[in-house]
Length: 340
Image (cartoon, rainbow, N blue to C red; front, side, top):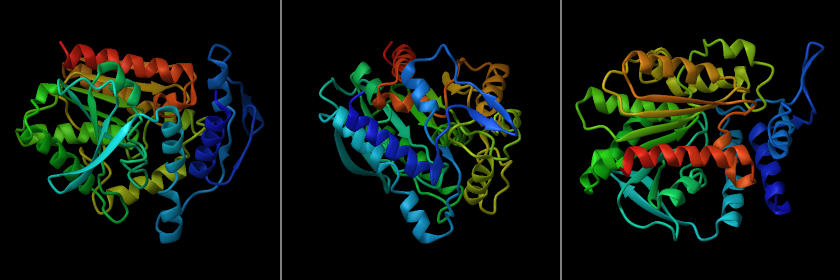
């Protein structure tokens, strides 16, 4: 790994987590869990990076502003790795978005509509626009990263409304539904599911495929992994996630089927790929929603990565073999769905 990229990886992690400390193993109540022996050395290094110790108060304007700048370090790492990537700001039905292109883009055969992560309270479409750049390059297509509104200033349903508006704008520009893939990670993964469900409920044509990484589908945090992984997840903290979930839901119940798409129904839902790691606080979100999809007859693939952390595919930029492999798997799925 290039030393500058490694430094950016560490800075990005430090800023995202808050105040941190390093640990070779996860330890709690006198118990430790080793890093899996079978994963790559670079993956082991990521698992051994700092652990979160302090929450960020997103209700505090100054802390919120700092928190929302964290992904700039991630963007810098991508810019150094892929300087040829081009990002162009546009407005789609009143919503800001960014076209993402590379020299490998060959035309308009298909498009990825990308919804970034950040627990609905942070992250931004520009800095995270390159999260699935390897997929775009593999398929030779463009991506559109959506700047949906964030909580707590704009609670549910603002994000869903924005994502729907951008999707409908793509249709109005001449893209056919079967040419569009809805792709997202973490909160953006949950938002991807919620957006497609909302489109279905109002009778709009649905995208040809959905691919989500570590989707946050249950904002009530009621899954088994919220018990079994509460001490072992290297990125997410339960109390922080609950706080963010409440900020996003606002006055709406967190059991609302578009706030927590786990509690929705999945009849007539597009083919879906779900990726998740075993070291995730919200691993249960992916497992349970995939089961609901299967029961509803959806063509769904649940891809579980042993020893991987939250949204590990987006860390391709740091040269992690498992992250690069996951990007290739997403590309393979979308090629089969969109470029038949």
